[in-house]
Image (tube, rainbow, N blue to C red; front, side, top):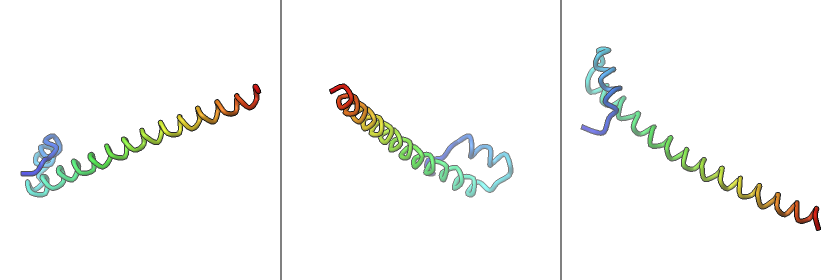
Length: 67
């Protein structure tokens, strides 16, 4: 048996879905969750990069204004 979300699997079974189909659907959720975690990690990196660029740009602009 592949990795599945047990709560989703149990909900599908209690709703009368075929066990094989319930297993496939709940394991598909694991794949989407993994992809979403990758996107979140990339977004966090991009946020830090933009923050760094804003900080550098601000410091350069202040140096130019105060010089």
